[in-house]
Length: 108
Image (cartoon, rainbow, N blue to C red):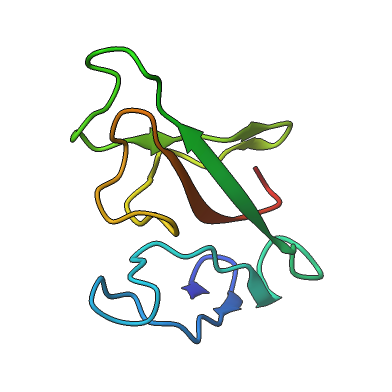
């Protein structure tokens, strides 16, 4: 990324697919600047393991899209779609537990 007004450049390396049909299927990645940018050294990316447990009452499951937002002292991650479960194909059914991974940089 090049900012013409200041002349600053920042490099963001990904090295992963941004495609629902490739790799882990994620289309959102946290990419800390590896050179230039606002921080002299890149901020680490934190990998969260998220567990979601649905209730046992009637109607406690959902077929709707489910989102997660993690807030911290420096801001938040924005809404992240919990699209791909590590433990189940049909997510968020009644009386089930699902595990997901979420990567965020430490600005959140």
